[in-house]
Image 1 (tube, rainbow, N blue to C red):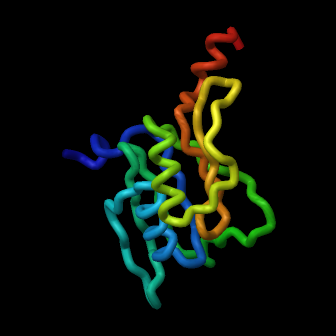
Image 2 (cartoon, rainbow, N blue to C red; image 1 turned 90 degrees about the vertical axis):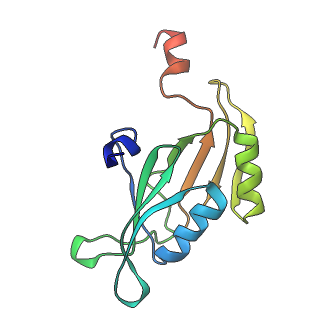
Length: 142
């Protein structure tokens, strides 16, 4: 199977973590990502990695000063990740059991999704739920 066939979609978010090896372990344990590839760097860093979740792929690395990639500094966030899951209740239970910080408990949203929000160890925000982009808004004629 080709790499293109294994990775669905056209967006592959990239994350920079101060402790990328620890972040990868957390993303696997708490959220169910699976390692496809990890390219080790000097001193226990990660040059590049690809983690898969239900056909989608994210990339994780250590900071790269030459590219001005830095880890979150706890000063707020400019982005978060929304991931569609079939069973948000089970996914949330897994995340909790792995020690994920749940910042918004499971709930049914006015726009038809059921989901929750968690933070990874470096403060990135993840929404896991049944949201399908556009579905609710199409019903409203927006």
